[in-house]
Image (cartoon, rainbow, N blue to C red; front, side, top):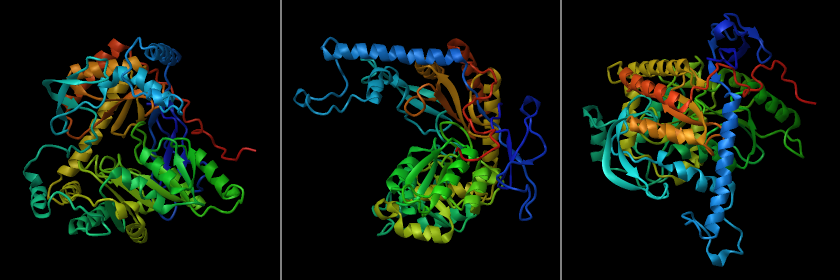
Length: 551
């Protein structure tokens, strides 16, 4: 795969490496300006290559993609004209005639896109399933008689569809079995819910047990759990920063991080995705110039990143970012929703993946909705930080506490992963996930598809580009009993529509080969094999060696 960074990471320090033939990595590390030594504080010398692929599409693919959207826009305006004159029935939401002099609510571009393009391919989303979302599931068949404005169920069930879209990384989301007996016991003893916040009558012994176990699993001082993963970010970032603080956010951060940053009232600046050089430039400006107008020093500088980026499949360049955080005295908040349980030799996330100390990250956030097959999230770190959040967290004050059976299921899952159940099956699943990820990525790359992300990431985006091919891709795969998630604008840039595969330890080699065979055929049918193994120009600053500010 192409390696835009061409870098290696050493104990939280960044070193450049010269790219050798066939994208191999050099065995020597050299200084690049962020740190002075490859070995500090007596730590052993350790280098981990960052192997990522962000290949650019051929020119003709981008031309046809924009032409497709252009034609869709042209015909969309024509159909809106027909609807306005009553020639074509309008099924979309419209204002009443009495509101004709009001400011229009439905004339923005995204609504135009949804009405004229998204609706034509809407059958590829929100498909209802009627079984446990394991490596295979059952899908309820539905059809539309009005071009996807409405659907009706046929009563037919599509059995044993291979699930390539769920975040079931460790295969812990499945049907009831005898190992779940403890969850059943907790359900009988505690009931289904708490019906109270953590600050009132909602803190149970099960919550304390889970928090202690999470802290032990992550090797940090303390942790706090919440009932909703999205709210773990959006409702807690405002408790950490506010007016007079600066947030430096990766441009591809999840919506929960973006919302939390906006709600905080802090000043927000974005840096280029996974780009330490651009981040350092912003940190220097923040330290030198301070706040706008007054030029006072910022009260806090908080860096927001994710462990694994769910739309790109990339893994955060944590050692470089930690080195910058320490150099400029900033704080680091890392969202490990997609990486905890899925990365590292024992599933402990990005810090273990890079061989770093968890205390290098000030705030560790994660969710239980992916690898652990449950719901909710956690924040972990120093005890004084967690104690502060217990008092000031909006989610703890206003949000309902986690359901007791959910807490027990997470406890069971973490113990399984840590080997506290007396077996090594948890460790074996982490290893199997890594094997499946490398195998699937390698085969897709060999077939000639453009795929994004780090070679170790279980989230694998396959670029489709053209909106018509997005719909055809998902429909053809469902006919072959393969369920995938396809993603387009506004979740991605308008010219970078893609399919997103999520690997699981529960996928067998036979399942993966079945999917790969189907992808090979459909790739030829739809002409999706765009790869020319060229490095992308997207990470513009990856190879910069001078970090001086612009004049």
